Image (cartoon, rainbow, N blue to C red; front, side, top):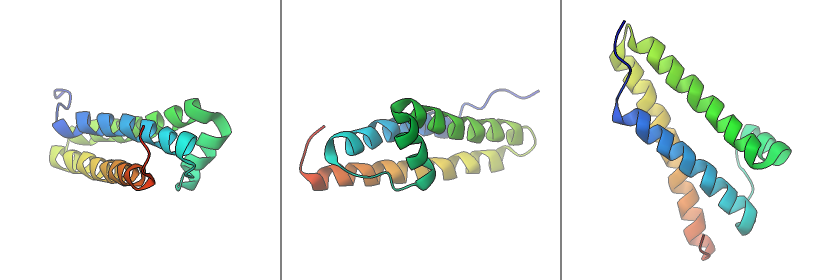
Length: 107
């Protein structure tokens, strides 16, 4: 059995996911924005912060688990999967920060 994945992409994905949750609730709660992702919107408006945390944790868990399983046989593919997920999540975080800056309000 191989060692656990310790790539920086894994840790950055986790940090970006937490930032995504925080920024989503800042934008929705105090800035009047609407969640653009219809699946995430269902969890945000149905269960609030807890729903969003569970939704995001579930997504990240599936991605990380898949990367760990794939890394046993194809570590380069597993790393690319994490890089893709990191790119998508960081794109959402950057977009959220831009929305905050455009609103002219602070956290």
